[in-house]
Image (cartoon, rainbow, N blue to C red; front, side, top):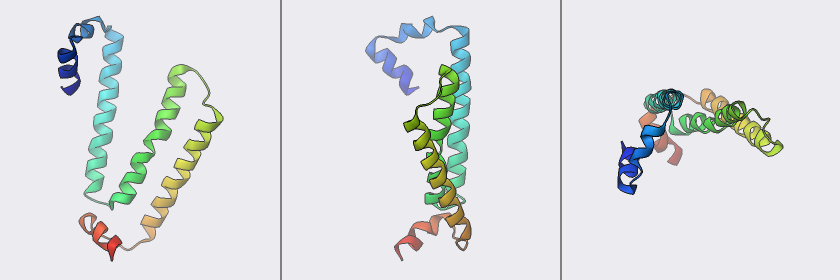
Length: 115
């Protein structure tokens, strides 16, 4: 809704009509994936410490790198691969550390960190 409003304000709302059926399919697919991802993240925040949930969210950069390579038909550069590996290792490390900690209700996680 915000993006459509932006197009209306900038006078480019007519550009929506030039999007092909295939283009709208991609819009729908990516919208559903994003909505599912954000919904899952919000639900996870209710059940786990924010540090663990955010670490998983950061992993989206790795997924984005993979999807971009597939879409472009290219192999990611060494910097992208190294960055993705560092992120993946960090996410796994946070997951292991969080799993080893005693159970902490999600709302109490920040209080525990400051204690």
